[in-house]
Structures are given as structure tokens and as C-alpha cells.
Length: 93
Image (cartoon, rainbow, N blue to C red; front, side, top):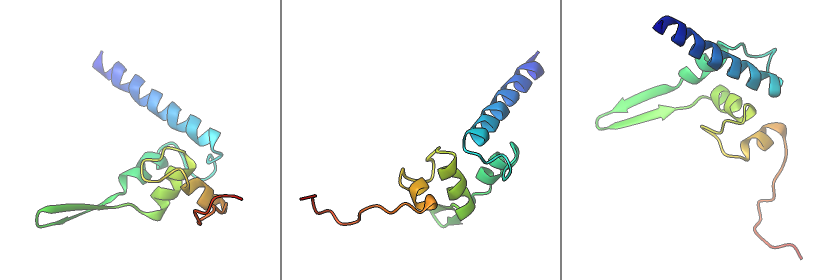
């Protein structure tokens, strides 16, 4: 009985990933298995008492395109699409 529950959960997650890919038009670039594999590719570096992680450009790009914002800010999808934001903080007159 537990096997059926695990299969159901796995299919639910896979369907959710497929829906996100469809909504963001990434069907031709990533498969439903490639998305979790890309997120699993994070590199971890350990130095004496510190633990550091490195997030690749591919992972940041996928994260921004899927609108998950786990490793990005809200401005990163705009940056990927070439939208420029005002950098000066002067008020409009």
C-alpha cells in the first residue's frame, strides 16, 4: 500500500513540474526529469567550520524562468529578457 502512495506523490510532483514547464514554454528545452536534476547539481564546498554552496548560471536561469525565486530575486526574469530598470533613485519630476 505504501508503494502506491509513493507512486501517487511522484506522479503529482512530475505533473506539477510538467505544468510549470508548459506555462513557461520550456517544454522543448527541459524534460520533467531534467528540472530536478538541474536543481540537484548545486555544488557544496566545505572549509574548516564553514559550508559554502555554489549555484550555477543554468540553475539560476531555470529558477528565474520557472518563477520559483529560490535562488533569484524578482528582477532576474526581467534581466534574462533584457528589460532595463532605472538604477538612479531620483524621484520623477
